[in-house]
Length: 204
Image (tube, rainbow, N blue to C red):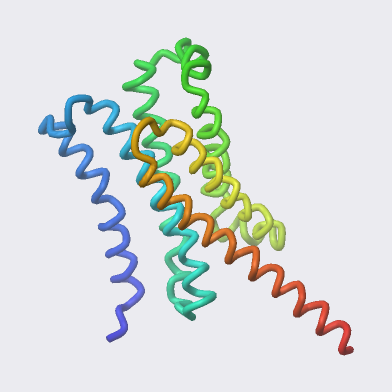
């Protein structure tokens, strides 16, 4: 049975806000562990990366499995990526910096992985702001070129995670493998597309 688009959108929206509901509920019930502040920061960051990977999976699924219906929901998944990235940034500002930006300089020296997170968030903000139909019309072909920056954002996000791992690398490796497959498939598809164009021109 085919699920109507509106129901799919509501389903994605509800599933998308469940992590933040869990985090807020955990904070209120004091069930986020010994260091709830760190849990809020880390989990919001993890969910930003997860939604980024899910967003990239949309094109992969549409291209290789012919799930074209997924493309209707890519924007929402991308906006959830931005939402959790900004939540991650806000949690870091409130609970790690203590709302004191003067401490950021020391943090950048003590935690160099922050340098990888900054460009990732900036890129996601730019992509989020230009995700509307209006910006698509204004930028035309440049819109697609701009949104290729999602791949550098993925790389920066993964490095931000990998650099701060202190014990088990399992989760970082899993995300890295998924990201590498998505990026590699994109590169292969672009090479094949360019090859087909050249072949078509040669036949004319």
